[in-house]
Image 1 (spheres, rainbow, N blue to C red):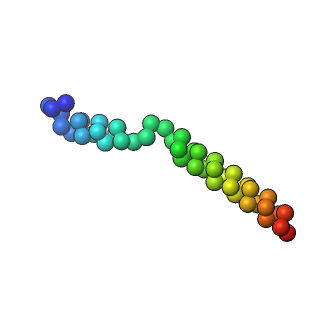
Image 2: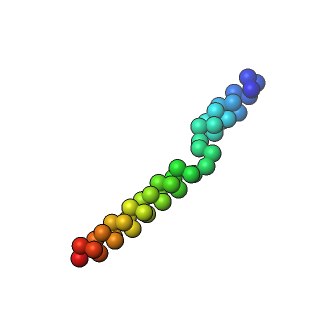
Image 3: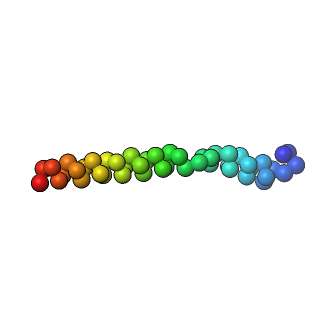
Length: 46
């Protein structure tokens, strides 16, 4: 890779990206559950 410094740099940058979006999907799932729980609690109060 010493002959191709731009390719080396590109590979290093790409290596920092997550392999999957599992953490993002989990975050949305948790937020959706919290929203659902809050709506149920609000309906019980009203």
